[in-house]
Image (cartoon, rainbow over all chains, first blue to last red; front, side):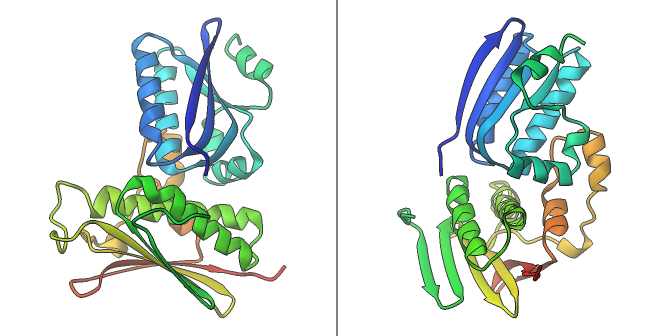
Length: 115
Length: 159
């Protein structure tokens, strides 16, 4: 069990958030707080790097989808990067990949905001 | 793995019992124990991931709803606790999750369609969908004598 960590870096106008550990009902309020604070500052272009994420529950998924919806209403988005296969299969089965953009490279994720 | 303080674990042949305080900080421990057992009995990794998520959703629901602070739950004098009994029988994994919080009418609860919720980008309300989608059987019972028990079953299919 790895502790949940959030690291944030700016890539121009895009916020790259690196997640590690488990995103569950215990940890998701921390991500929620981070994203809420960013949105209040108008930082609504977000890429979540999930390379080191080992679990995501519906509380975390719900929070992500909710923030993506809010961001889109203001011209931004929340996109996923480097989703581990184990997690990708789960979110694909549940249909979340139909509404959340998932990218395999940082370049593609960052570049997708320009189009 | 090391058993955290305040957690009771009892292992016998083909069965494991776990009792943890009713607190979200124990969810990771529960997931670890359940996934280890699911792997040991031979579930392939994609199925282990589904079992992990279903159990996590079940326990999260207990904490969010059954033990919600604004509800009158059973045996208020007792500290909230989640008890799991995990056993293998007849080619299936049976996981029973018991609490003594507020019960609800599980069978009458008909959440909105999963596809619609996702399409609407709803921020929550996915837990029961996930349990029903990822497990082969989901049953709920509630009584003043035994508390609330959610029974999740996954068949160990031979490939």
